Length: 187
Image (spheres, rainbow, N blue to C red):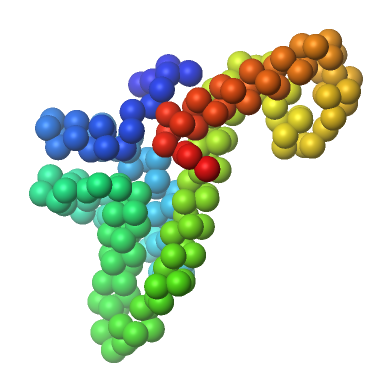
């Protein structure tokens, strides 16, 4: 279990560790980072919460075997494709007469979907990094950047000196940048 503020290992390191040890806890931690995206994708294709939840579990079982024999460079993208293929196969099993063309996406749509998934992942990483800030930094950053309050409004709402507010926002911003870089978010 990682401590608050501790830098999370990259996906690649977790994958390597899983391959070497077959430690399901490590794979579970890695999968958990993206499980909400897998669920959303499954829900989009399968249109049923129960089926989507079943698919999320099946995909986890499927990747635990596949990762031992497949070299994966970018886990998130690979997981997206595995999840999508799983959903398409599930739909084909339910209705074999459904034509594959219905499910094929053009390159442009797929690019947009990948961008959307990456943006969502970046936002989740930002939320996680905000939660790792010290309480006063966190509060000042949320008020200033998320609620779009001025320094003076943050000062009035928190009761902190104006210099402290500016300091917490500046330090919080720097800490967020370092945290995001540690999570490979480079936007």
